[in-house]
Image (tube, rainbow, N blue to C red; front, side, top):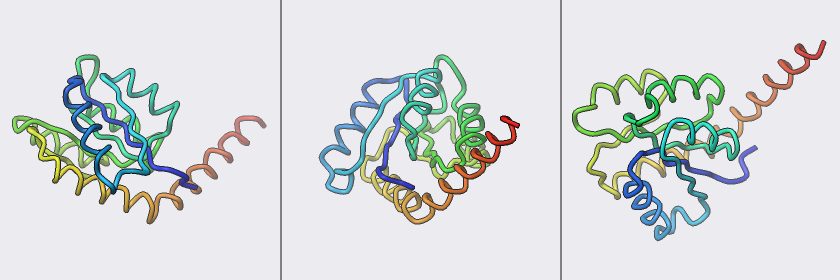
Length: 151
């Protein structure tokens, strides 16, 4: 069951992460949302494991890993996570590729914060509408896998 919405911002530029977090902090639509940040691939994996965010704002180019690989890897283990790709204009093809790996949407840099807010609100709506169902299904699958492993 979904108790709260956590958003993980993954970008190697702290200015971008902080700008997104500050913008969301002052928007009434995001008052009940917890914002987390990660500056790279490994840190993002750790935050994902520890905090279980439902939405990830994911930069494609990271200094310690490939954002596309991160999406592929994460969607296998956490199918309910909504990825929103943050991309530069030159990475538009890679953003489209991310969509084939399960990303829900993308937004281009330089960021239009109003557009970002709209895309994030849509992701929150999806999480609330069918996220609980997916979470229950995922939990049941993991419980049955754990039972098989224990036998």
